[in-house]
Length: 320
Ligand code: DP6
Image (cartoon, rainbow, N blue to C red; front, side):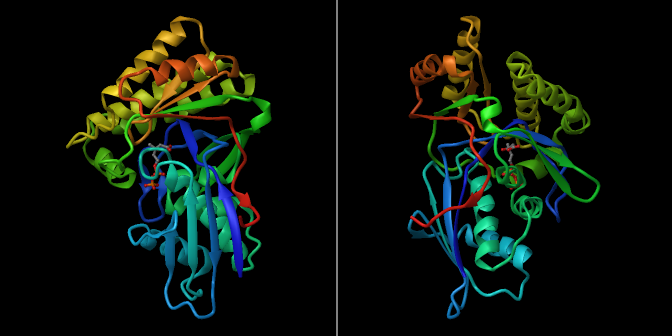
Protein backbone atom coordinates (compact mmCIF):
# COMPACT_ATOMS: atom_id res chain seq x y z
CA UNK A 1 0.00 0.00 0.00
CA UNK A 2 2.93 2.33 -0.59
CA UNK A 3 4.78 3.37 -3.73
CA UNK A 4 7.28 6.01 -4.81
CA UNK A 5 7.47 7.49 -8.29
CA UNK A 6 9.44 10.07 -10.19
CA UNK A 7 8.25 12.29 -13.00
CA UNK A 8 9.92 15.11 -14.83
CA UNK A 9 8.24 18.24 -16.13
CA UNK A 10 7.75 18.71 -19.82
CA UNK A 11 8.01 21.84 -21.92
CA UNK A 12 5.58 22.30 -24.77
CA UNK A 13 7.03 23.40 -28.10
CA UNK A 14 3.56 23.44 -29.66
CA UNK A 15 1.41 24.72 -26.83
CA UNK A 16 -1.79 23.75 -25.10
CA UNK A 17 -3.86 26.85 -24.30
CA UNK A 18 -7.63 26.48 -24.11
CA UNK A 19 -10.13 23.78 -23.20
CA UNK A 20 -12.77 22.12 -25.32
CA UNK A 21 -14.52 20.74 -22.25
CA UNK A 22 -13.62 22.28 -18.91
CA UNK A 23 -15.54 19.62 -16.96
CA UNK A 24 -13.35 16.81 -18.28
CA UNK A 25 -10.37 19.13 -18.77
CA UNK A 26 -10.23 18.16 -22.43
CA UNK A 27 -7.80 20.48 -24.29
CA UNK A 28 -9.06 22.52 -27.23
CA UNK A 29 -5.82 21.86 -29.12
CA UNK A 30 -3.19 19.16 -29.49
CA UNK A 31 0.35 19.86 -28.29
CA UNK A 32 3.91 18.61 -28.62
CA UNK A 33 6.45 18.65 -25.83
CA UNK A 34 9.86 17.56 -24.62
CA UNK A 35 10.12 15.71 -21.34
CA UNK A 36 13.05 16.96 -19.28
CA UNK A 37 15.68 14.90 -17.49
CA UNK A 38 17.26 16.62 -14.48
CA UNK A 39 14.28 18.48 -13.04
CA UNK A 40 12.05 16.11 -11.09
CA UNK A 41 9.21 15.53 -8.70
CA UNK A 42 9.45 12.45 -6.48
CA UNK A 43 6.31 11.35 -4.76
CA UNK A 44 5.47 8.70 -2.19
CA UNK A 45 1.84 7.68 -1.80
CA UNK A 46 0.43 5.36 0.86
CA UNK A 47 -3.05 4.47 2.06
CA UNK A 48 -2.62 3.84 5.81
CA UNK A 49 -5.56 2.00 7.37
CA UNK A 50 -5.82 4.63 10.12
CA UNK A 51 -5.72 7.73 7.89
CA UNK A 52 -8.92 9.79 8.30
CA UNK A 53 -8.32 12.36 5.55
CA UNK A 54 -5.91 12.96 2.70
CA UNK A 55 -2.65 14.63 3.68
CA UNK A 56 -0.09 16.27 1.40
CA UNK A 57 3.39 17.57 2.04
CA UNK A 58 5.49 19.35 -0.57
CA UNK A 59 9.20 19.54 0.19
CA UNK A 60 8.47 18.49 3.76
CA UNK A 61 5.72 21.06 4.50
CA UNK A 62 1.95 20.55 4.55
CA UNK A 63 0.38 22.05 1.42
CA UNK A 64 -3.30 22.80 1.97
CA UNK A 65 -3.52 24.83 -1.24
CA UNK A 66 -2.73 21.95 -3.57
CA UNK A 67 -4.50 19.26 -1.52
CA UNK A 68 -7.99 19.59 -3.10
CA UNK A 69 -6.60 19.03 -6.61
CA UNK A 70 -4.60 16.04 -5.37
CA UNK A 71 -7.67 14.57 -3.66
CA UNK A 72 -9.79 15.12 -6.77
CA UNK A 73 -7.19 13.36 -8.91
CA UNK A 74 -7.11 10.40 -6.51
CA UNK A 75 -10.95 10.23 -6.53
CA UNK A 76 -10.91 10.21 -10.31
CA UNK A 77 -8.23 7.51 -10.48
CA UNK A 78 -9.37 5.24 -7.66
CA UNK A 79 -13.02 6.10 -7.06
CA UNK A 80 -14.55 8.15 -4.26
CA UNK A 81 -14.82 5.09 -2.01
CA UNK A 82 -11.01 4.88 -1.79
CA UNK A 83 -9.01 5.06 1.43
CA UNK A 84 -7.47 8.33 2.53
CA UNK A 85 -3.99 8.92 1.18
CA UNK A 86 -0.74 10.24 2.57
CA UNK A 87 1.16 11.97 -0.22
CA UNK A 88 4.70 13.27 0.19
CA UNK A 89 6.12 15.19 -2.72
CA UNK A 90 9.62 16.54 -3.29
CA UNK A 91 10.57 18.79 -6.13
CA UNK A 92 14.05 19.98 -7.09
CA UNK A 93 12.98 23.12 -9.00
CA UNK A 94 10.78 26.22 -8.34
CA UNK A 95 7.07 25.39 -8.01
CA UNK A 96 4.27 27.29 -9.80
CA UNK A 97 6.59 29.62 -11.67
CA UNK A 98 5.97 28.45 -15.21
CA UNK A 99 8.31 25.47 -14.97
CA UNK A 100 5.51 22.92 -15.28
CA UNK A 101 5.64 21.71 -11.70
CA UNK A 102 1.99 20.62 -11.85
CA UNK A 103 2.81 18.45 -14.86
CA UNK A 104 5.47 16.44 -13.05
CA UNK A 105 3.41 16.42 -9.85
CA UNK A 106 0.26 14.89 -11.32
CA UNK A 107 2.21 12.49 -13.52
CA UNK A 108 4.11 11.28 -10.44
CA UNK A 109 0.88 11.14 -8.43
CA UNK A 110 -1.04 8.84 -10.78
CA UNK A 111 1.91 6.43 -11.07
CA UNK A 112 2.55 6.19 -7.32
CA UNK A 113 -1.13 6.15 -6.34
CA UNK A 114 -2.17 3.46 -8.80
CA UNK A 115 0.66 1.18 -7.68
CA UNK A 116 0.09 1.88 -4.00
CA UNK A 117 -3.55 0.94 -4.56
CA UNK A 118 -2.52 -2.30 -6.26
CA UNK A 119 -3.82 -1.36 -9.72
CA UNK A 120 -2.09 -2.22 -12.99
CA UNK A 121 -3.45 0.69 -14.98
CA UNK A 122 -1.76 1.14 -18.37
CA UNK A 123 0.27 4.22 -19.27
CA UNK A 124 -2.36 5.78 -21.56
CA UNK A 125 -5.05 5.54 -18.89
CA UNK A 126 -2.67 6.99 -16.30
CA UNK A 127 -1.87 9.81 -18.73
CA UNK A 128 -5.56 10.49 -19.23
CA UNK A 129 -6.12 10.64 -15.46
CA UNK A 130 -3.13 12.98 -15.03
CA UNK A 131 -4.45 15.09 -17.91
CA UNK A 132 -7.85 15.49 -16.27
CA UNK A 133 -6.01 16.94 -13.26
CA UNK A 134 -3.74 19.18 -15.36
CA UNK A 135 -3.71 18.99 -19.14
CA UNK A 136 0.05 19.20 -19.57
CA UNK A 137 0.63 16.45 -16.98
CA UNK A 138 -0.55 13.78 -19.44
CA UNK A 139 2.59 14.36 -21.53
CA UNK A 140 4.95 13.67 -18.61
CA UNK A 141 3.90 10.01 -18.56
CA UNK A 142 6.05 9.64 -21.69
CA UNK A 143 9.66 10.52 -22.38
CA UNK A 144 11.48 12.28 -25.20
CA UNK A 145 9.32 14.15 -27.71
CA UNK A 146 5.64 13.58 -27.02
CA UNK A 147 2.53 14.55 -28.95
CA UNK A 148 -0.84 14.91 -27.26
CA UNK A 149 -3.70 14.41 -29.71
CA UNK A 150 -7.24 15.46 -28.86
CA UNK A 151 -9.96 13.09 -30.06
CA UNK A 152 -13.74 13.45 -29.80
CA UNK A 153 -13.94 12.01 -26.32
CA UNK A 154 -10.43 11.77 -24.91
CA UNK A 155 -6.78 12.46 -25.48
CA UNK A 156 -4.18 10.14 -26.99
CA UNK A 157 -0.44 10.32 -26.45
CA UNK A 158 2.18 9.43 -29.04
CA UNK A 159 5.89 9.30 -28.33
CA UNK A 160 7.45 10.85 -31.45
CA UNK A 161 11.10 10.25 -30.40
CA UNK A 162 12.89 8.72 -27.44
CA UNK A 163 15.54 10.87 -25.71
CA UNK A 164 18.48 9.13 -27.40
CA UNK A 165 16.91 9.62 -30.87
CA UNK A 166 17.55 13.35 -30.69
CA UNK A 167 19.70 14.45 -27.74
CA UNK A 168 18.51 18.05 -27.55
CA UNK A 169 19.42 20.21 -24.56
CA UNK A 170 17.26 22.70 -22.69
CA UNK A 171 18.68 25.72 -20.87
CA UNK A 172 16.18 27.40 -18.55
CA UNK A 173 16.72 31.01 -17.55
CA UNK A 174 14.89 31.67 -14.28
CA UNK A 175 13.99 35.36 -14.25
CA UNK A 176 11.65 35.35 -11.24
CA UNK A 177 11.02 32.87 -8.46
CA UNK A 178 7.54 33.76 -7.24
CA UNK A 179 4.31 32.06 -8.25
CA UNK A 180 2.67 33.23 -11.48
CA UNK A 181 0.06 36.02 -11.34
CA UNK A 182 -2.66 34.12 -13.27
CA UNK A 183 -3.00 30.34 -13.13
CA UNK A 184 -3.23 28.42 -16.41
CA UNK A 185 -6.80 27.24 -15.90
CA UNK A 186 -8.09 30.76 -15.19
CA UNK A 187 -5.97 32.20 -17.98
CA UNK A 188 -7.32 29.76 -20.56
CA UNK A 189 -10.92 30.49 -19.61
CA UNK A 190 -10.27 34.21 -19.89
CA UNK A 191 -8.54 33.88 -23.27
CA UNK A 192 -11.34 31.74 -24.72
CA UNK A 193 -13.95 34.25 -23.56
CA UNK A 194 -12.20 37.49 -24.51
CA UNK A 195 -9.27 37.24 -26.94
CA UNK A 196 -10.27 38.08 -30.53
CA UNK A 197 -7.40 35.79 -31.66
CA UNK A 198 -8.55 32.72 -29.74
CA UNK A 199 -10.62 31.05 -32.47
CA UNK A 200 -7.78 31.42 -34.99
CA UNK A 201 -5.35 30.01 -32.45
CA UNK A 202 -7.46 26.88 -32.12
CA UNK A 203 -8.24 26.59 -35.85
CA UNK A 204 -4.59 26.78 -36.93
CA UNK A 205 -2.97 24.57 -34.32
CA UNK A 206 -3.12 21.54 -36.64
CA UNK A 207 -0.83 23.28 -39.14
CA UNK A 208 1.85 23.93 -36.52
CA UNK A 209 1.60 20.41 -35.18
CA UNK A 210 2.04 18.92 -38.66
CA UNK A 211 5.16 21.01 -39.28
CA UNK A 212 6.61 20.16 -35.87
CA UNK A 213 5.85 16.45 -36.29
CA UNK A 214 7.61 16.42 -39.67
CA UNK A 215 10.57 18.32 -38.18
CA UNK A 216 10.92 15.77 -35.40
CA UNK A 217 10.72 12.86 -37.86
CA UNK A 218 13.45 14.45 -40.02
CA UNK A 219 15.45 15.74 -37.00
CA UNK A 220 15.24 19.12 -38.71
CA UNK A 221 16.25 21.53 -35.95
CA UNK A 222 15.71 24.73 -37.96
CA UNK A 223 12.19 23.75 -38.89
CA UNK A 224 11.37 22.79 -35.31
CA UNK A 225 12.87 26.06 -34.10
CA UNK A 226 10.83 28.21 -36.47
CA UNK A 227 7.48 26.57 -35.79
CA UNK A 228 8.06 26.41 -32.03
CA UNK A 229 8.89 30.10 -31.68
CA UNK A 230 5.94 30.98 -33.91
CA UNK A 231 3.57 28.85 -31.84
CA UNK A 232 4.88 30.28 -28.58
CA UNK A 233 4.48 33.88 -29.76
CA UNK A 234 1.00 33.07 -31.06
CA UNK A 235 -0.04 31.68 -27.67
CA UNK A 236 1.33 34.77 -25.91
CA UNK A 237 -0.50 37.00 -28.43
CA UNK A 238 -3.72 35.28 -27.34
CA UNK A 239 -2.76 35.87 -23.71
CA UNK A 240 -1.83 39.53 -24.26
CA UNK A 241 -5.08 40.23 -26.14
CA UNK A 242 -7.24 38.68 -23.42
CA UNK A 243 -9.19 41.08 -21.19
CA UNK A 244 -7.80 41.88 -18.73
CA UNK A 245 -4.50 41.06 -20.48
CA UNK A 246 -2.39 38.16 -19.29
CA UNK A 247 1.27 39.14 -19.50
CA UNK A 248 3.73 36.69 -18.02
CA UNK A 249 6.89 38.33 -19.36
CA UNK A 250 9.21 40.70 -17.55
CA UNK A 251 12.18 42.69 -18.80
CA UNK A 252 14.54 39.75 -18.44
CA UNK A 253 12.18 37.51 -20.38
CA UNK A 254 12.53 39.89 -23.31
CA UNK A 255 16.27 40.22 -22.68
CA UNK A 256 16.62 36.44 -22.95
CA UNK A 257 14.65 36.38 -26.18
CA UNK A 258 17.02 38.99 -27.60
CA UNK A 259 19.99 36.94 -26.43
CA UNK A 260 18.60 33.91 -28.27
CA UNK A 261 18.20 36.01 -31.42
CA UNK A 262 21.87 37.09 -31.12
CA UNK A 263 22.93 33.46 -30.72
CA UNK A 264 20.93 32.49 -33.80
CA UNK A 265 22.59 35.26 -35.80
CA UNK A 266 25.95 33.89 -34.66
CA UNK A 267 24.99 30.51 -36.13
CA UNK A 268 23.95 28.60 -33.00
CA UNK A 269 21.21 25.97 -33.09
CA UNK A 270 18.88 27.39 -30.44
CA UNK A 271 15.31 28.62 -30.06
CA UNK A 272 13.22 29.99 -27.19
CA UNK A 273 9.92 29.01 -25.73
CA UNK A 274 7.97 30.58 -22.84
CA UNK A 275 4.99 29.22 -20.89
CA UNK A 276 2.65 30.65 -18.26
CA UNK A 277 5.47 32.36 -16.43
CA UNK A 278 8.46 34.64 -17.06
CA UNK A 279 11.11 31.93 -17.46
CA UNK A 280 12.73 31.41 -20.85
CA UNK A 281 13.47 27.90 -22.00
CA UNK A 282 16.10 27.74 -24.71
CA UNK A 283 16.13 24.47 -26.62
CA UNK A 284 19.47 23.91 -28.28
CA UNK A 285 21.82 21.50 -29.97
CA UNK A 286 24.45 20.02 -27.62
CA UNK A 287 27.32 21.87 -29.29
CA UNK A 288 25.65 25.23 -28.57
CA UNK A 289 24.78 24.59 -24.93
CA UNK A 290 27.79 26.36 -23.41
CA UNK A 291 27.27 29.48 -25.52
CA UNK A 292 23.55 29.50 -24.68
CA UNK A 293 24.21 29.11 -20.96
CA UNK A 294 26.77 31.93 -20.97
CA UNK A 295 24.58 34.28 -23.03
CA UNK A 296 21.44 33.76 -20.95
CA UNK A 297 23.40 33.90 -17.71
CA UNK A 298 24.66 37.36 -18.71
CA UNK A 299 21.17 38.81 -19.23
CA UNK A 300 20.28 41.38 -16.55
CA UNK A 301 17.80 39.96 -14.05
CA UNK A 302 18.46 36.28 -14.72
CA UNK A 303 18.63 34.66 -11.30
CA UNK A 304 19.47 31.12 -12.12
CA UNK A 305 20.25 28.85 -15.04
CA UNK A 306 19.06 25.24 -15.12
CA UNK A 307 20.36 22.82 -17.70
CA UNK A 308 18.93 19.51 -18.75
CA UNK A 309 18.67 16.96 -21.50
CA UNK A 310 15.55 15.05 -22.48
CA UNK A 311 14.39 12.34 -20.10
CA UNK A 312 12.01 9.45 -19.65
CA UNK A 313 8.38 9.32 -18.66
CA UNK A 314 6.98 8.97 -15.13
CA UNK A 315 7.92 5.71 -13.43
CA UNK A 316 8.22 3.88 -10.13
CA UNK A 317 11.49 4.35 -8.24
CA UNK A 318 12.95 3.11 -4.99
CA UNK A 319 12.12 5.39 -2.07
CA UNK A 320 15.13 7.46 -1.14
C1 DP6 B 1 1.31 27.41 -21.11
O1 DP6 B 1 -1.57 22.00 -17.97
O2 DP6 B 1 -1.11 23.92 -16.37
O3 DP6 B 1 2.25 25.52 -20.05
O4 DP6 B 1 -4.99 21.83 -17.61
O5 DP6 B 1 -5.59 24.01 -16.60
O6 DP6 B 1 -3.96 22.50 -15.43
P1 DP6 B 1 -4.52 22.97 -16.75
O7 DP6 B 1 -3.35 23.73 -17.50
P2 DP6 B 1 -1.79 23.41 -17.59
O8 DP6 B 1 -1.45 24.38 -18.82
C2 DP6 B 1 -0.21 24.41 -19.44
C3 DP6 B 1 -0.13 25.61 -20.32
C4 DP6 B 1 1.22 25.90 -20.92
C5 DP6 B 1 1.38 25.26 -22.28
C6 DP6 B 1 1.65 23.78 -22.30
O9 DP6 B 1 2.28 23.23 -21.37
O10 DP6 B 1 1.27 23.15 -23.30
